[in-house]
Each structure stands twice: as structure tokens, then as C-alpha cells.
Length: 340
Image (cartoon, one colour):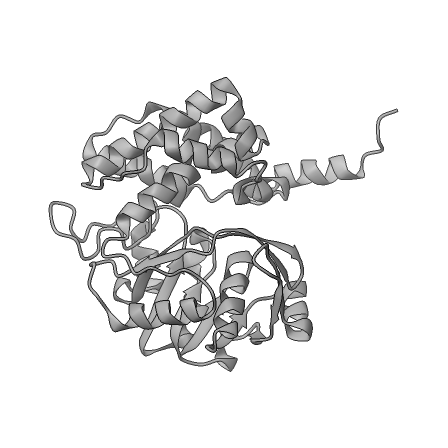
């Protein structure tokens, strides 16, 4: 199987290294110092399951790769609408795109029956921009349960989890899903093919919608949020509101909010990717994680006052991140002499 990793960051490079180890032909598409390190030394994975190094091809130019069987999309969702020029050289007649994103995907109502069939979620697919860049018929959904980070250019630290759940948006049993799952398993990863990936989406989202914005707003780890009585109750309320929206869309899960919160607390002092972004002065990934759920609440008539409040506060911070004022403040603090 010929696979391109478009956006070979923490998750993309980890999956690409595992796929290469399992025998797939893998091409990593990256940039900057990270790309230089990938070219020179390959991907070095540091993992509690055992360290290893893989040396797939690495490039900044997808035209050097050409059409592939699978594009594994490791970009953050806010970059999907603009990824068309990078994606097009990789696309052949049967190329599928495995979108390893958090939150509500642009294909959410594709292949479903009922009153919302074919509806566009405007928050995540504004004006159909993402659907034009990545046609929904190309999409394979993917919910990532692995936690990774870039320890240094070319070095990926695998923290926990090896599960990448995938599935067709319409729930069909497809050869392309089975083939990709087999390639992932050959590389030592878990890759179940789910008949309805939407339940996985909401289970994962219960944590993301809560801990990603709260960690960024409070500069706290997941465990710190869970151990403080006030923020613990806030997290539970956000999860309950999230499940109310899911239920109105016909999704039921066996995972309770208490169990989900306990799992987050067991993760310990884990710093979410959103917290890392804010600390680096980068905008947060809010639309697919939080604002889209509010759009779906409006669609279904669900009451989500807590989600709305957190979204409003987070959006104000995001506006400052996007205009560069937070990054300027971080840089000024870094350069300021220490207080006596």
C-alpha cells in the first residue's frame, strides 16, 4: 500500500513510522527543521512500548510523491479548507483520505438518513470550502486515541494509546478501510473498522470539548482540572451538555461522564495540544471541538449554556492569538529580566 502523510507532525509522523515499519510504502510531507531531521535521521519514536526508528521518504513537495492509495491527513482541521493545492498531486482515481481530526468532521451528515441527511455543518465546512478541497466521497473517518508530541525535530514521543478507529461515513464495509486497517495493524497499531464511527467521535469529543479549552484558559493540566472541585463540576456539566446534543442526533454511548472524567484524571499532568498552542502564541482549534457542537445544539434544540459561555471566553482569547498580541506578550515576558 502506498501512503502519503500530509502533515507529518506528532500524530502523522508516529503513524507514518509505524506504517513504514509494517511494510507500507510511506511518504512523509513536512517542512522546516522537522523535515530536515526526517530526511537526515528518519523518524525516531520514543515509546513505553519500545523505541524504534523508521526511515520513510520525506519531502516538502507532494508533487515528488504523486498519486497514492491513501492520504493520511495529519493537519489540524482549521487547515483543511486550504490544503487543496498540497492534496491534489497525491490524488488518483481511487485515492482515499483518512482524516485524523478531533471534533466534528465536515462529512458528519454524509451517508446518513433522516432530517439532517446531507446537511453541511457550517462551522467546520464554511461555504463548502472543505468539501471542495476534500470531497466527502474520498473521506474515511478516523478517531485518534494515541497521544504523542514532538520532542525535538524528527523525534516523536509516544505517551500512550495505539488505537486509530476508522470507518466509512455511510457505515459501509469497504475494501479501502480493511486494507488500511491491515497496514496499520502490521505496524503495531490498533485500527478497528467501526460500522458507525459517530459514537467514537462523541466519546472522544467529550474529553476534547472540555479539557482542550479549559486547559488553555486556565493554563492547567487535565489532572489539575479534575482535582479542583469547581473546574471538575464545570467539566462534568460540559460533558453532560455534549451528550445531550449527541443524543438528539441519535447517538448513544455506554461511556458515562463520570467514567470519561476518571479516564482524564488518570492521564495525570498531561498538557493538551490546545494548551501547547496557546503557550506558543498559536490560535486554538475551536471550531470543530466546541463551536460546531453549539451549531448542532441550535439545530436540534438542545440547551448548552455552559458550552456557550466557555466558547465565548475562548473565542476572545483566540482573537488575540490570531492578531498576534498574545504571542507578542509571550515574547516580551521571555525577554524581560527576572524580577529581583
